[in-house]
Image (cartoon, rainbow, N blue to C red; front, side, top):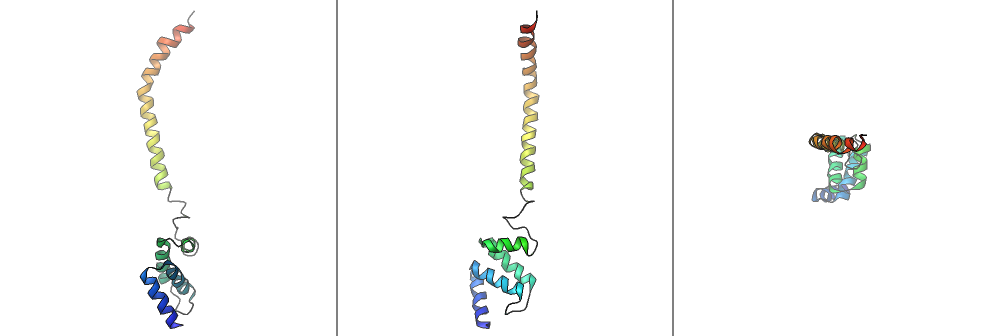
Length: 115
């Protein structure tokens, strides 16, 4: 069992995301190794950054860390500035176009309805 874990750790350190995920599961559950949540979290983060789908799900569910796929608060960081920028441009355009629209209304529309 120790040889298998040693090989798993070697593969994980070499960058194999499946080995990183399996090693994280071993640390999280204490399977053949001393249970260590922080070590499990570190290996799970490495696997998730590498693109392992199950590791991303586990980070969101097991350790309370929002994963890139499950992060509901992250988009607010760019939604609000995007909408605020749009609102500012709309206000600016309305301030610039208001005199033109007022002129059009006063000189072109009102005389048309005058009797």
